[in-house]
Length: 571
Ligand SMILES: Cc1ncc(C[n+]2csc(CCOP(=O)(O)OP(=O)(O)O)c2C)c(N)n1
Image 1 (tube, rainbow, N blue to C red):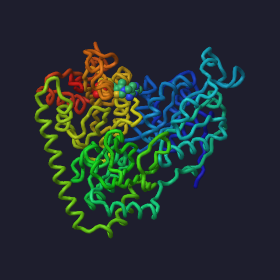
Image 2: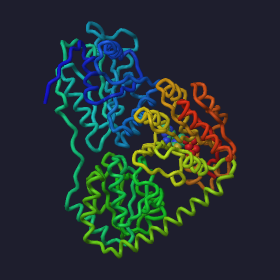
Image 3: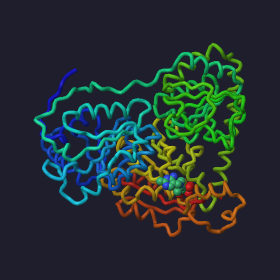
Image 4: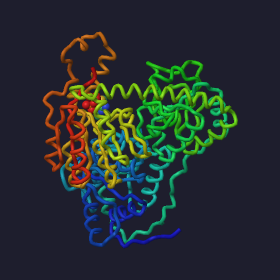
């Protein structure tokens, strides 16, 4: 364990150097008056050569946070985000809620109104420094972050940064929040000495308890029709192979429900799609792996006598106020270690003949499901306005096999299955819209050599601050393809209304309020205004070639592209 010494002169310089030392290589930021000591420290580092995180500007806080979210999810690193005091924090809050529910570790920081009215370096010197102060700035996001603190002085810098990073990355991961008063950042230091590497490391993932594994194994071994439902198992890419082996070995069908990560390759013989509704009713045991909502109880649910096992780093989702899914066994374990342990416990208990019979049934069901999807694709190929299934099917044809798809949330995975771990990112169950475009930029930053495609509803795209998004794509050379499925409405609001009032006045009305998005701008021109390629597509027959043109812009010309695809809404 060695101590390192740096010839820095302020806390701001030491802070940036320490972040870089701890592996924080990007600082996504939306600045204000609180940034002055950091701007100064960056400028100094530029000529001293002190390693610091790459500074990356984003012109809206929700964009900065969504970019960080995508970057963290794709790279496995912890990025930092810094915003302007209370108001910047408020603008980023939607992104924080998304990352929190998806367990994405991010060091979220904000300035804080200067503490003092005069006297100290960094004291208040403009009128906003009074009104922006809050009694409890962190209070607005305390429920969403794992930890929050305010840096009090330079002496505690190492402890505070290390503790923030260790807590953010200890499973289940999540954002943490640190406010940085201007006087503290400006505090003079006569050098900075710290441990390298850190002496405050993250806690290990939970290992499975033997008794819980035995109980779960007995349930699964006794079951005739077991089912696995997951949303997030693939957050840890190592868990994808573990799940693939487990499902294959015991012939247990897997449904990815509202998946946020690729959990099982779409072509795995046990993959039975993305909707548990058709399967849970016949299941006699359900293994729920890293999945907050394995079915919608008001619609379909397993029979009363079916046994339910939950496995994950926090299998009860203890940060959710209400979640009452039946739980006969809850195994606290990372799937990458929990599933192999479960496999060892089940193996001696299930005869091969049971597994082989089930394997045949899954194959038949899989074939029938695939045939249904193929039929829909065939009929949708000529539908006008363009059918969402056709958009997904065309994307499946043109995308690079190694590409990354971001789905908010109009891609239909059954028509565009992903095959590689880390190649799919779906929107957070918190569903704070406006995440996808920024997340795609963050992923592209993390993986510059991979093709990155974001599929966004027109509503989702508008929530993302499109002008800020296209500016960031151009300014930071992040050539991403944005596929906007433009049904000129908030289809989800329409579905919800018709679902609750199928015979109601709104169902009879030609134009109930809060659904249609009239007079939408030409999104393709918004992208083009930032130097990107933009095209509007209305004819289904044009779509494959339009996608090729857009991907040519992205892959060869290295500039962003947007297809504004005019398509059908829900019936
Ligand atoms: C920040 C935020 N505001 C509002 C909502 C409510 N909401 C959920 S889906 C949706 C419509 C999304 O429209 P679009 O992306 O076009 O997809 P569509 O529903 O038409 O398929 C809205 C407004 C939300 N999830 N997040």
